[in-house]
Amino acid sequence: MMMKTLIKLRYICLGLLGIFSQSCTQVKSNASADEVEKIEFYSMEDFNSVEKFDTHVHLNVFDSTFIKKAQEDNFRLLTVNVDVNQNAAYPGVEKQRAIAQSLVKAFPDRLAFSTAFNLDNWGTDQWKPQTLAYLDNSFKMGSIAVKIWKNIGMDLKDKDGKFVMIDDPRFDPVIDFIEKNNITLIGHLGEPRNAWLPVEEMTVANDKSYFTKNPKYHMYKFPQNPSYEEEVDARDRMLAKHPNLRFVGAHLGSLEWNVDELAKRLDKFPNMAVDMAARIPHLQYQAVENRQKVYDFMVKYQDRLIYATDHGVDVKSDFEKVNQSAHQTRLSDWEFFATDHVMSGKSFEGEFQGLKLPKLVIDKIYRINAEKWFPGIKK
Image 1 (cartoon, rainbow, N blue to C red):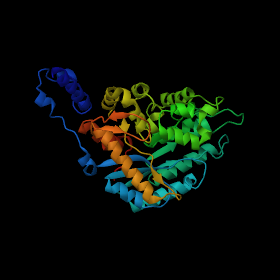
Image 2 (image 1 turned 45 degrees about the vertical axis):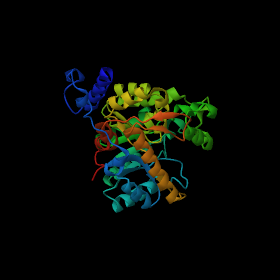
Image 3 (image 1 turned 60 degrees about the vertical axis):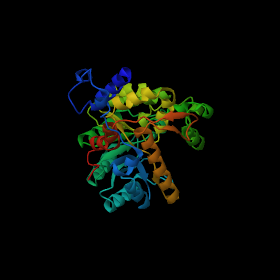
Image 4 (image 1 turned 135 degrees about the vertical axis):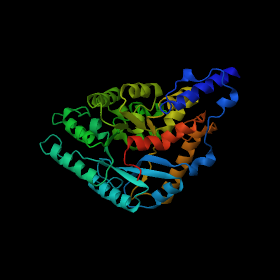
């Protein structure tokens, strides 16, 4: 009983870090079990009553149903433009920006948007001024963030055929401009480590499905391309060059496979946070073997973790189906973070137990950190 009490005391102390100045050593060692039990938790019944943010969605068509369903779930949204090769799901960045602006105008209390820039004219004297002008206009239009995508490091090449990485000095003036304007940079750089494995060795089903459908980014098939380590290292070098940049690494910063590796980067780069978009199954996968490690990570880095899903709609979407899927994902994620229920998911075989994080940690993950790392997200 005493050991359980001491363990709970440790979690309380970690949960209070950043709010109170006291350290764990200042908590009375003779605190009673009743005092320890005063720490508060949410339940499934609290899901709708708690204000939440999803900081990574893609609304690429003027649709109100997705936003209204999110509102029913008590979510505000950040819709993120991406410089994907133009297709039906992702029109060009200017069209994405126009759609986002229209939606923000229609739902100013529910939605904010993040812009993106394209790589047209890369390697010429035109690219820098056109990009700075585009970003300047985006900020004047209300963009609160800029998204950079994996095409930097995985698609873009110089005239000599060499891959261009995000630490290339030609990106520095653009990154400096983003920082100068107090704008957050969202970085989807690299891919899950699973991309460098055969499909049958990948750890979660959504990666198996994505890289089967998108073989262009299944790096296992392209050993001549930059390695996983080279992608992550380039991102780290960029952060080292820009220590005052406010940076959010999308998809757990492409370090989804190991909370220890992610912790190393969060320790090294205090200007870095990460969103959890489409990578929560990787946390659950790790919780199967070591729930305590995942719990400790979430509590220790509670100020640097931001809830997100990567859901969205486009012209091809079955809106009813997408909205229901998004709702079920939000409920399942809440169950994982807020309860200690024994769960199983669609992404891998095996059961895992919910983390049952304290209320304070939940509030940070779902709301406070979004407001901190994306100033202007809340109207």
